[in-house]
Image 1 (cartoon, chains in turn orange, brown):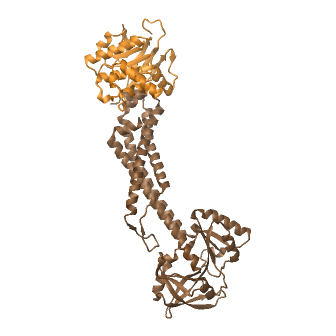
Image 2 (cartoon, chains in turn red, purple):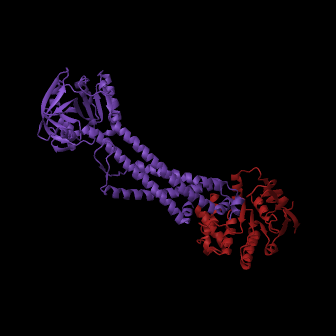
Image 3 (cartoon, chains in turn brown, yellow):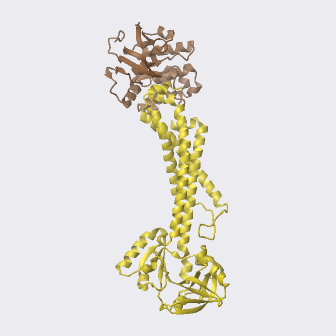
Length: 233
Length: 403
């Protein structure tokens, strides 16, 4: 297990993670006993070819899926015994997500999308709205708060998604191919934003990608191939 | 959020909402029509002569009893005193029922007759309204009769003619009395119209040598809704005084009303089930499509930390929003259609056993609106439940990967 160079205890760990999927009559290993540890404030890039297990690893670390073997530990505590609601609460309070396809709620405005995780946590509406506007301003979208996702550009949508991901002040943000649907200029802007949040707010980022531009900004690079780490930079 | 999701696919929501509007309006109108019809039949039954409560010798209520002086009402004065002392009783109508033959001199036809007190009867019953010719009886001792049009026709009798009534007296001898035909009544049930004869208590008593005896006391209450309570109280009071008579309420005395109510219940119950199934299928289709289209979005909401229970509630709320909107629309439609139908002048065919049709009238019946609302809400909630459960149970990564 590795946790970068930080002396702090890892905020998120995966220990011996195994995940298999059924493909027709065969079972396919997506992860074959992977160990990974993410320290507070790290910017980790997980790279590898398609089918190498990047998304599976993000899903397991994000408590969206259960490993067939191994364990995920959040702030040193195993999540294997948590029920569905406890896992949902942990995702809500401690983990942010950025998806390749932005995944904004189409019936919400940008501001409402960002306020939604806070509302789930019980933050009063006025406060969550106010904080959402501040977060949108921090990603350069203060004048797009009242706009619905279908009227935003791809880059704007991903900025809203990032603002939503950090809305509840998570320790770690997991991003799965966050620049895949963006042009070079927009992708660079998104990466700069994530790096700024990483350094400015000490939010850990784990970014699954095969975009070399993302890897250039990484503090640590993990390379997956056939469900195993082959190189740790 | 639920409202916005409903508004997201307007055409589909409008279609489903339209089905709810139709379902609710059907419930409200059918309920109003059924209530109006049953209340009309109830009031008609009571005012046609049945009254709210009848008091008679127990044997007179036995199946096959002909209501003659064979079973006179004992202690009639005591009975009347008990009845008149009850605060729910508006009027007490003594009756002397009998059977016999009516003759025009050359032909005789059997009749079912009643001697009554014309003034209070006219005040509380619909007898005068049934007259198509002539007039109602004037006083308790007038030597006159009212005949059903069928009975008069079979004997060729007209208003002003004199007919002879033949009947068996209390001691078994045959007696006869002449009477003037004062009026002709058109009764809704043909079998009754062909045999009906009403006369005054005085003439009937003389004919039967009844010496003031009656066979029945008919009680008219101020409020039909208090029949049950008044009946129990009257039965208790009669029992306390050891008066050997029986008292029955109008519903027990009107098997036709009970049959019609059962028939209506069956018809409208079946119609209600069909409506609920139609609304259920339409709404379930909408909700299933909505859930399928929003699979990824549900995955995102779950990933962000939304609990499964919230997803279930969200879909239920969408169903309820559709139901509420549909109920409001349905109520407006029902109220508008009610006005149109009530002014349409449509005459419905006569019910079984009756000779007259009745105008279509749909009453505003709050219970039917309430039942429609409950049925639509329950149906939409049920229609939402399956997709809601499915959406909430779907593994998050499957939902996120859904294309």
